[in-house]
Image (tube, rainbow, N blue to C red; front, side):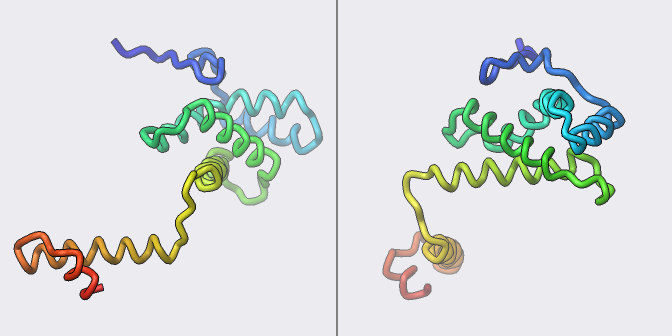
Length: 149
């Protein structure tokens, strides 16, 4: 049976508050004025947003608690950097910031660093292999792929 309760980093997500857009706007104004309690309410009111973003990164073998914590850092940065003058909803601005923070974490904590040029070469080789497989109607040899690339 599916339950809506998920506990991550000791936080029971079923009990997280959900803020209305008008509440977020008021809290953001108070945060810009330096109100730390408004910032905390805004963070707590948007933890579900972080949860929805980290679901995109599930299945990568990463600890969900770690991703949640990194996502929370992205949320805090988005709160601190949000500019209401851009006339966008907070979540529209926060999601890319949260995703960026998680991607940075995944990139920086990867055990093996592969250069962009090597990744591009590998991608090109995979495409070539697929094209040769279709053309030859068989699996191409490594030498055939290398010659074609």
